[in-house]
Amino acid sequence: MTAEAVHEDAIHALCQRAGFEATQIDWLAADLSLRRFARVSLAGAPVATAIARVEAPEDPAGRPSGVAPEPPLEPIRDLLERNGLPVPKSFGIDADAGVQLLEDCGRLPLRDAVATLSGPERWSLHIEACDWVARLQAVPREAGV
Image 1 (cartoon, helix red, strand yellow):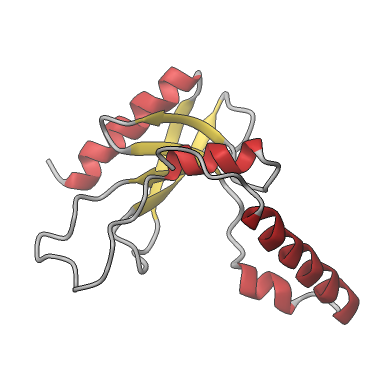
Image 2 (tube, one colour; image 1 turned 30 degrees about the vertical axis):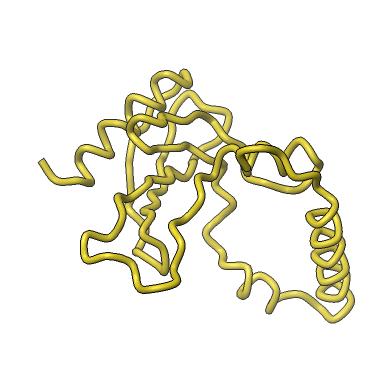
């Protein structure tokens, strides 16, 4: 059984625990991270699709010097959400399988979305993003995060 097939079983089980069904799982192209992501089509859910975030074991060849392991999304996502910062909604997590089901923020990359904005709209988005940085810096540090 392939690693993707094992993860797909975990994704299906996580969806069932959340009260809905995964009808299709489409793996997204690997990017700069060791993590894998899949777009999951859903039935019986409050949304049509979600993103499965799948933890990957550390690179068997070893990480390059100075590259730290990626932190777990939880509890960071929860901390940011509690402090009013925009984060994708979590529909569930299976820590043992290393799978989390998150809100799908869409297929359009941010850089492409920004390119479609007019000058005033782009400026407004820039101001909002700068505000998020200030709000992020004001989040109190918590143990274990």
